[in-house]
Amino acid sequence: SISAGVYEVDCTSEGQGLCDTHGVQGFPTIKYGDPSALEDYEGGRGYEDLKEFADENLKPLCSPSNLDLCDEEKKAEIEKLMKSPPAEISEKIAEGEAKIKAAEKEFEDEVQKLQDQYLMV
Image (cartoon, rainbow, N blue to C red):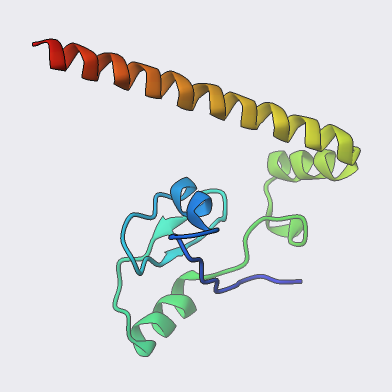
């Protein structure tokens, strides 16, 4: 099982959505940690700095392949998801994506209202 990885993403093309999701604004950007809550790496960019940081901070996380690292609540949640039919998981993903899309639309509409109001002043 994989417990760590290093990935390169092109934020100017097909990786743009991923970069937007994780708040990447400048390049190059280094992020680390739980894939659902990545943190910014602020250390040095040289080999020794990166190696020292990795040795001290990058450890396996709670995941389906590392259930022994999970607390009971997270373990139960993962086990429930692992038993769920794929169609049910796909449905939940679609529902979540629809909520995100609705929130983005509402945000854009409200920003437009503020911009229209500002232009009237």
